[in-house]
Image 1: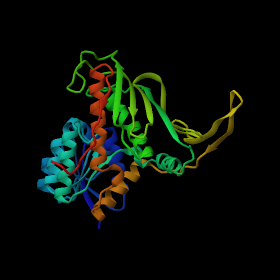
Image 2: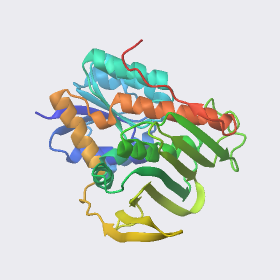
Image 3: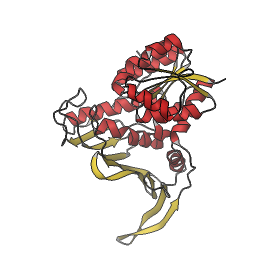
Image 4: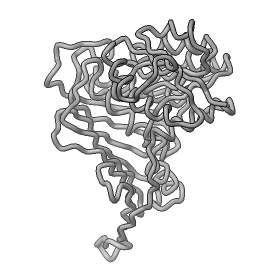
Length: 351
C-alpha cells in the first residue's frame, strides 16, 4: 500500500524531494502546492506531471478538500512552518519538515507534543544525519578509535547564497551542530557566538536585531568537557565543508568536498621521551563509505516511520527542538557580543 502524500513548497530543495518521492515505490505524490505559479509550471514540466492525477495548486488548504492524504512534506520558509505543521498534525497527517522545524524552541516542543498526542509521526529533514559518511563516522567514534575525545572544529563557507530572512548562523550552523551532537551522543550545555555584518546591517529580524551576520564563529561546550568551534561564512570564495573530531590517539575528518576520501581517520599520538614529546603511531586510514543519496534515505525513513507508526529517533521532533534551542542560545550570545549562554536540559514531558 503506497503512502499518499502532498508536498508543500517546490523551490530548490522541494524539487529534490519531489524527485525522490516520485521515484519511491512506497510513495504516491497526489498533490503539490506552491504560492509561486512559475514554480508549479517548472515542476510540472520538469517531471512531466499529469494534472489529472496530481493536483497542482497555489493554496495548500484546497488539497485537504480535494485529495485523500496520509502525509504532508513541508518545504516552505521556516517562518511558515509552525502554522502549517500544526494544522497538518491536527488534521491527522504525518509530517516531514525541512529543517529547522521552526524558529522558536517553544513552538518546536509544542508540535512535538501534538504529534505524540495525535499518534502521528513528525520527522525533520536533518539530511546530514542520514549521510553514509556521518553514520560511518559515528561508528568510528563509538569504536574508540580516537582515544579520549578532546575537541572539534568545523568550517562551512562559500561565496553565497546570501539569505535575506536569516543570518549565516541560522542558515549554516545546524548541519555541523547536528553532526557533532550525533557523533558525541550529547548536546552542548554552554555556547558562545561572535559575528560580523558586512552586507545587510539594515536588514533586521527578531533573531538578528542588529542585522544579518555574514560571518559567525561558534563555540560549543559539552557536559563531557568536549569543546568545538565552527566557522560559518557566506562571503568566502574558498568553499569548505569540513568537520573534525580530535582525540588523544587520532583525528576523524569528514570533508564533504573530497569526492575520493570524504572520511579519513588520521591516527597518531605524542609519547614522552625525556623532556621531549615524540609523534608515534602515525597512520592515515581512508574509511570506506557507501554511495547513497542522503535525501533518498530521509524519504525511506519517513515512509518507514509511517508504516510502523514509530518515530525516527535520530531526527525526531525532540532532536529538532534541541537544535533550535541551541541556535536560539547562539543568537542571544551574538546579540550580547559573545556572552556565554547556558542551555538547560530539555524536558519533553512537562508542560
